[in-house]
Length: 171
Image (cartoon, rainbow, N blue to C red; front, top):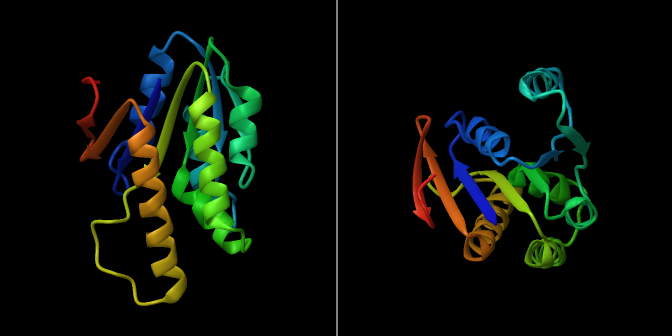
C-alpha cells in the first residue's frame, strides 16, 4: 500500500505519517531526505529525531531515494519517506535530471512491497514564484505530486492537523 500525505507547512503531515507508521504493525524504516544546511534546519531535524520511537530504523539519504526504497522495502516493512519536496530541492541544487529521478522513483514504488508512506509539502496552492529556481521547484514538485498521487492507493491532504482523504479509504 502506498499512502501519499501532502499539505502546507505545519499542517500535521509528519505527525500523521508517524501515527500511521506506528499503527501499521510493521517494522518501520524512516527515510529522511533533509540536509542540515543551517542551524534552524538542524533544530528541525533534531525535533523530528526526538519524536521517533527508538526501535525505528533511520536512513538519511538526500539524493538516492529510489535506491533506498528498493533496498529496504519488504512485506513486513513500513517505509516512511519524509519528505519528497526536500528530495526535489536536493536534486535541483545538485543539478540532477528531475525527469529521470522522478521516473526512477515511480518505478521503485511500483514494485515495492509492504507499506510506503510518502510525505510532501503542497506547493501548488500559492502564487507563482518570481525566481527561476523557485518556479522550477514548484513545477517539479507539482509534476512529482501528480505522478505519486496517481500511483498511490491513498492520498491525504492535511489541513490544520486534520486529514482530508482525497483518494482511497478513510484514515
